[in-house]
Image (cartoon, rainbow, N blue to C red; front, side, top):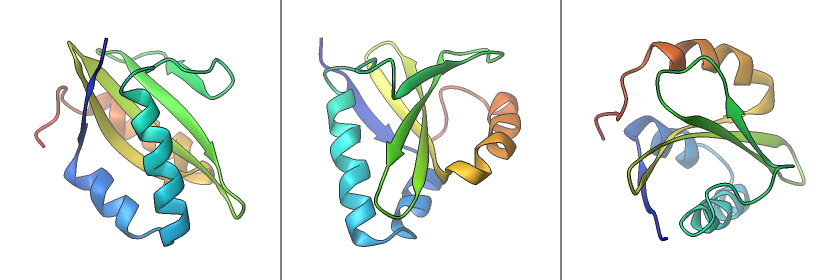
Length: 104
């Protein structure tokens, strides 16, 4: 089953603020989600306490570690946020309050 990937405006903005090489690596990992949204138990974790199925993808780069948060509805994967590991706990609280599926 192939999924359609949709980025929220906020995720696009966060992606644009990252170095080009990091952007490429994140986009490569995101493309894998189209065919395998639960690709690796080492990299993907379901986040509990959400009204919708929410997952975190860990992306390690040479400079930093990032977290890509996404939700799934039917055949669409919504990329909600792309943030540094150090900010992940703060963002989870905000994501729990957000509406899903998001307005793109």
